Length: 385
Image 1 (tube, rainbow, N blue to C red):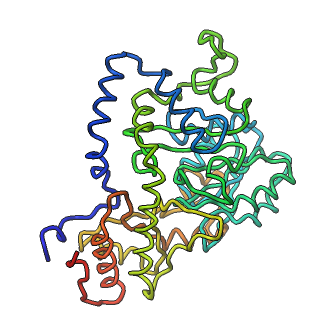
Image 2 (image 1 turned 90 degrees about the vertical axis):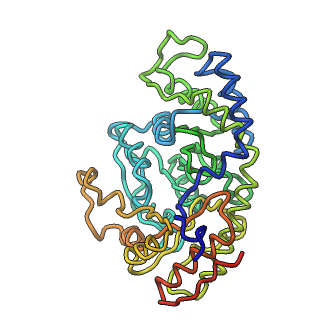
Image 3 (image 1 turned 60 degrees about the vertical axis):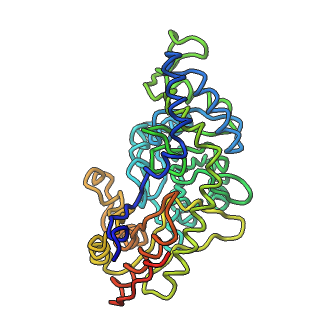
């Protein structure tokens, strides 16, 4: 086995992005440092306009992180004490923390076992007058079934918010993620399809009133054009100038990188066909996932993960315990067995390396190690490249 092959392959390797960004990024840092404006300046304003155009919405408000984006959008839609927000438990806990931050009660529905996104049919049992919003998660870069979700929510007069933290650039029915509901909420955490060099987030919307409220809430509830007049109780949830500038540099590359990850996913599918595991479903007509993660399901997940670790392959589990079974959320009253599809996925999902710059031979290496772990085969197919 070569020295290259023996090196650990991480789940994400963000260092591969830096050479292409380095010169532009250093010039950007110098420009912003020389100007001495680090908050609510020209870089943020420009990024908001550019990302709104990218999402095909009329407004974008940059905020501190993806959890803040969700919480502020939900607050702007009326979520608060005495109200409920419906979402899924098979998601990052930040989705549910955002609901709790408003004072509303999280209500969970199960997922579709094939797509692992919200089961729209489950909404029929939980939509009621106190439902402030439905929070649909575009999981692993795959759009949730927004047409079916919207049909039920529109009939009930309930707005839909997109948790698009993993789905920058995804398409459904010819429209981009972020433009499919009342608001689309994004995270720019460094590992995301559009990642900053730190934390960041945004709310995209076509609703000018919602955008204005989020803009106020992110900066102490201030009035437009008057930072000393506070019209509502807000906080400090701004996207800073340095992160906005980095995101502006990376945004023009986003679609090309999504296509690259799509090609990597296709190679995974080809190499893993016929093995005793479940591959993520292929995109349906009119749908494009951006392959933020490549997640398989398999029995004996933890044993296989240990075998891959011994072979120098980094993996992840997104997510090992559904939120309704986490200790912090016991007070909601859910128990094991309440969300069977979510619980089954949590026990079986395994994320394989997926990032821009990953090489074909590295995909082959992962697949060879996975084949050995599953079948005991000794074939080493990744040495030739």
